[in-house]
Length: 285
Image (cartoon, rainbow, N blue to C red; front, side, top):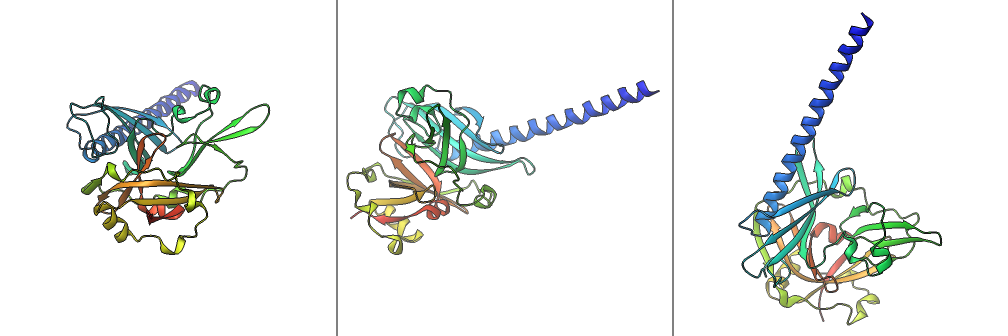
């Protein structure tokens, strides 16, 4: 009798586990399709790209995609003359509702969250621990060596100061509380707005917090082909940085601003609300 009860419990446990796996598989499939739809619409593709997915954290995933085009693509990011395009999305999975939230996306010659962005050749070939992702502007690898602990930025590969005890601005669950509406209302990109903000470092010492552009002013200036500088501070104000702003994509309930990285030749689209948590926008003088 006990043996029969044991096997009955075992069968019930296996059925519950199987049902759970089916639910997870279905949720992942739904997220994959949503991501594919977003890529197709936002990057104006006519054919499905090849995509791959990897986990950054328990509920945040990195989706990378490649696509071959018969024309040079100019309006989504970088001019890619060999007709090969690569891009990425970072999504937050909400398996309960079978929904996903777009945290950031972009295209370029060298993409963030890849060891290819690391300048140091020795570290580039090291087996790095998992990326610590807190937001589109705060992510890093933490590498322990016999001599020191090294922190490398996840989007630029830059060597960071010690982040021991670092606390991110806010919890991800608070940062990304909305679900995106995928209806693209307006898309603007202008490669002529690219410039190198590190040619003139006056923004490092200037106090410009009071005269940053409003959302309306930012979009108006971009639509009028005016060069805009984004200045930010991250990792508890220990790192100051700047990007040229080259466009935006506007959806029903959100706006993503396009930042261009001169060194890596990539364009990243990040929620305007998130960028304002770390910095401000200014007309280039």
